[in-house]
Length: 341
Image (cartoon, rainbow, N blue to C red; front, side):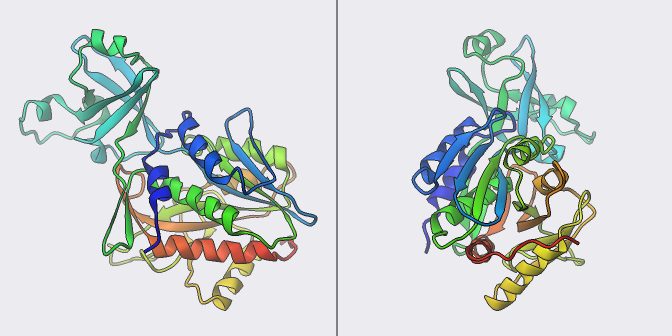
């Protein structure tokens, strides 16, 4: 079995939108000896450059994850919270969290007054009913440098289950994409093109890192590597875990570039990689902001299906991850020149 300690480390790292420093440092250590240039821009995007003489290509995966922020600290120490990114409220109850401070990480559990008192209730539980219980008073929390605006991440919980084929844990969105980019950087030896690998920030709150980095790089074409929802537990399923990486033809915000899609489909057929075309009315990725930057950038999206997306614990199939790496490495070794549709 392949060693997936790096993917587990990436998933378990603290990296809520707006606070991506820890995850960025892990990535820097992994790729600094495998690229010609490496720098962090003013917004916090990590940009890795492999030099070449032909087309300028950009691959992007976002470092940030969904999380929470301290909204208020009440007199008895209850910490009220605000969401960072889209999270289903139902999944937050009784989850362990870590509050990032200058003194370290303060652990706590999300609860409500009724649940804390072991009472039953049939009312709908809203985010406003929830709070973090750290077991500390307001004075103790302040001493530990917890304050309004402190970032909160879900507790590290990555593990491999399901006969060593399923990765479960927080932040699969999009540490899977970061892992795929790292592996491509390490594997890609024979290439002719100039390639920029961008680990973006603040995707979950507005796709901001993709926009600013694209203006800097000005690529000829681009691919975003992200995850997509897996609905194979429903009777009307269109995407399955272990059924191959996805190719987003359309999402809620963009239509992918048909030429790039065609390249990827041809490679998948040649390499006997099962690929899942994805047409959706929900969500979007960094690719939308890349595609409409400057004069426009032909863009596509390669993804990995994830169950329980945008919750505290997702599930993904490691074969889908490996096949996404194989697909993209093959493309980048000798990519065609872009066409405009």
